[in-house]
Image (cartoon, rainbow over all chains, first blue to last red; front, top):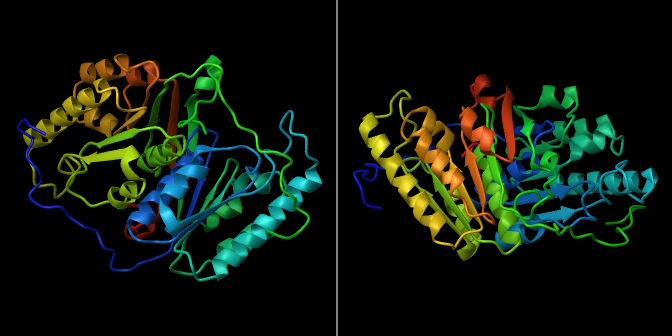
Length: 193
Length: 193
């Protein structure tokens, strides 16, 4: 670039005196929960970390991140599980199937957490799965409480449970100020899915 | 996976009848603004789209996304510009240099927007740069107003200006519920940078 804006004299690098695995909750009704978790995956990959993403209730609807994450290579794996949002209009699957899928996803999360392979595990929409009783509070708290000390754990989805928030280190609530769909703009690839 | 949770009968794919480039604003004081924008980059790459990320006030501090984004390959370019957060304690650069850097970044954004090369442009921390008067409201509005109809534009940073919010299609405010640094936990790689 030209102009008066010269480069910085040096580029600083943070390195915490104590490395600590964090529990992060991203909740709220606004856009940006899953996308924020995907961004943490990018960031973690940049640091050479290994990432596992388990999506709840999302296995039936293609999303760009399924292919986008593949571009990051072998540092990341993504498991899209489930059959869409339980209880929304038009979803054809009975609650028992949603519950069985979510229970499998919890078991998968346990295995991945205990594998020692990952520096960051993202449980996408697990808050919502808990709200819909597809997983139990005790199961989520057990995952949070058994997190290896150096591993980061991210839990996304609206309506995060108070006891999950209580245990987390960092919690963001994403509030919808406005959303394109309220102007009858359909979901757009690259932004909404 | 084992268990009763069978795979969905089919995987649905959304395709909007009308493709429309959106203006998205991610603001607020909570964690997840830049990370959310990075997630949209991943998602867009998955759809084969081309992405340009221009970071304001961030060129002096290494962040994992600088290397993480490289893993996504040639679909994405990231330009980290500037010399850190203007006005925060310990930042050694005068305001005029911050302003010059931000002005260069605006010019770069204009060039990238007019190049016809990108499906998604992310102006990371531009809301904050506007608040700090490193860029002018008229400049930001001109960028928003001159956005090609099919291109997505994402503007992040706290304190988004009301007129920018007014023009946007989707706006999320990320509210800090809690943050690890308030427990004196240092910023951690992979999550915070």
